[in-house]
Length: 541
Image (tube, rainbow, N blue to C red; front, top):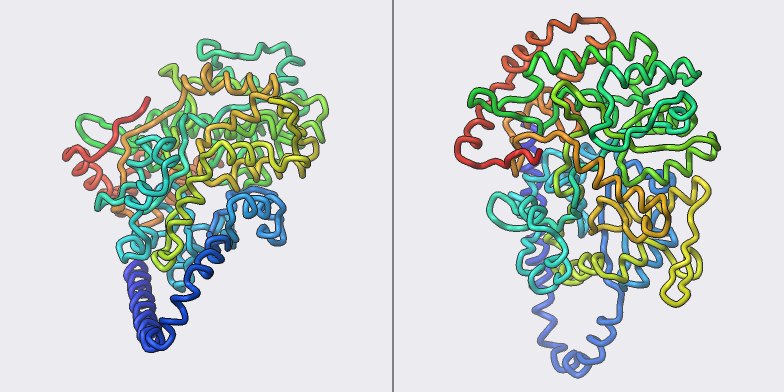
């Protein structure tokens, strides 16, 4: 019902806009004949002035939990935004969308009709239930021809898998993707200095990975060493799902598998799910994880690690060096290391594999008159000039060049680290977001991190049967619908009760049955139909 109401609002908004355009066009035609001779004589000078004028571009952007963005009084006044505008001859009006309220804010934006020139999505077409409705209603421009004519770097650098992800149901591209070259992005991080103190060797290859029980013993060792809550947890298991990966039991949207010819969520596997839940219950009972971790948000989880209260957690590997710098502020002797994720009974582990598109950018049809300049702006993001700016910042302030040598001022304070993270990870719109090679190549630690992607991360991770576009049978029953890295609320609620002892773990089959009875059967039916028709992607691992 909500989708229908929002769809009606969108259509009404479009009708009103078209009527206004007709009125304006009529008024313009009445006056054009009177001033045609005068305007023609000034046309050359006018066009020259317009060509030098910055293009106004408004853009909505999810804050993604970036501290520098969320704490900024007005990100449009930030010096890096100003420098970006100067380099590209644009006048940006960035409209930050709070990370934790993204879907709701996007719904409100579309319902109100106050849509910026460029809309940033979460994933290919994610960002509220109304995003796809907006595409269907014609709110966004088809971009195929514009990209072919004005986006040479986009076509050359963005991999086909990312283009496939933003190719809509009708075969048209409505979004330009940021892309991810390595889908194994999350990693298990541990305090290496504590391991050394305890005499525990640091594993560096998949063959040396700890088992789940070995990992629990290490967490117990950390507890005995005075670490308050050895494993840093977080609400909805976001970046706290290490052991669900060990047992191949992620309850996420992409985690589907074929069992006896039938497509089903991995949380149907009773043995794997109960083993994973039992592991977290052990951690909960023994104080290896904070007793209130199920309500901890991003800042709670991050602060636990960086203050020295925790010694193991999951994070995006490309941020390791920035977190290392922040840890040293409160724990000068602290040293972080990426280790192979704990292995389960099948000898595998790791985190869910990301899709190929972390963010994408769509152009409002009302901004058609500036669409060419917007495409050129996004295309510039993949040039050498852009890579230099976003990697190193402002020449003379953040770095100097001597011959062919870049002397980069490595960030030292928390504020400087947050600024670097914001500049590279948030403000740089189109890039391979796996890691930032220009920065990592400058230090031995950075070079080691790049090697970690090949020696550790490339050899772990869990995937499942995937669908592009995603399954939508549960769109109207969000309590049963999982997201990319968050279980469905109904599933999450029952996992939480079992971990805290409010429900017995061996009741898991009843949870699965209830999920099916409440409407999950609709998703099973849709998934099977699309699988049988060949409309799916095979797991990558």
